[in-house]
Image (tube, rainbow, N blue to C red; front, side, top):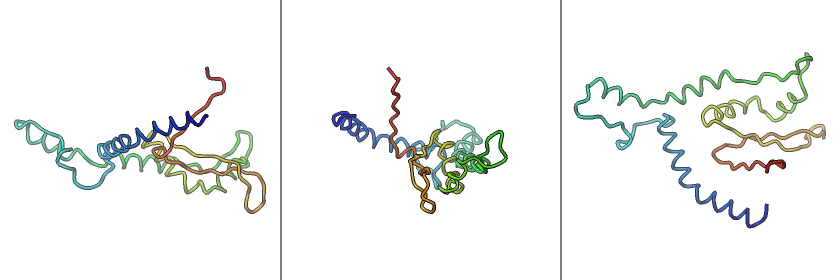
Length: 156
């Protein structure tokens, strides 16, 4: 990527950053990810002649159900081992998983996938601190704070 292209991309990201942040905040609120009282301007409006039970449903309808669903489902999605189909032993990838502490980091990764539809894990070459052998370093990246560019050499 040339310097001119990079400056153009950075300019586009800066231009869209504030509107995207505002949209994320509104979406988080509307999906029930915010605790506390609902601001008056975001409460649903009802006609004056609406039945009382309908008004009550509209008032109590804003609840943090989306967060509850994500928490419940993410607790069930857990990697407990990696094995090849024809082997009883753990695959080499399981050692990399354990070395990077992914057993504790996988729940936030799954929650990000369930809540936002995607999540990133950056994998880079590394050297083991104890044995000096080549390995991989895994780092989780928040999808809302990341910009990813995909390049396909065969794309026209």
